[in-house]
Image (cartoon, rainbow, N blue to C red; front, side, top):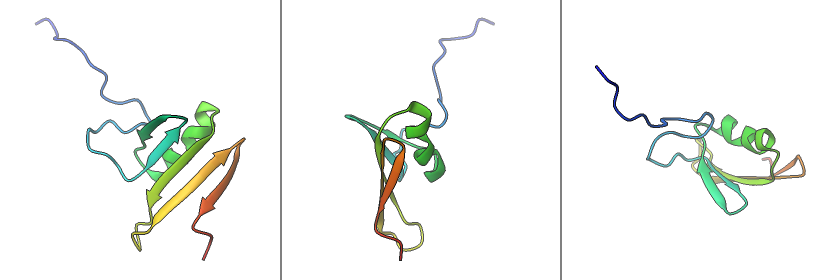
Amino acid sequence: MTPGPRRLVAAYPFSPTPTPTPHVVALGDIEVFAMCAIDALGMPFMLGADATITSTDPHIGQPVGVTITNGAATYQPAKR
């Protein structure tokens, strides 16, 4: 049996699902979804790029933002 056309299913740590995840990584003008929060935090360092990460606190449902600039991270909201 000859295999049919092949397609890329996933490129770790980028989310392979068509449904958006809560972890959005903005790399310049490109936005991608990460499989989990740890993957989202690692993407800027893996790619050597500045990024803005937005997610949601799983306990209280509030937005969380992390900005990576020149390898340094800042986050919102401030630690409680």
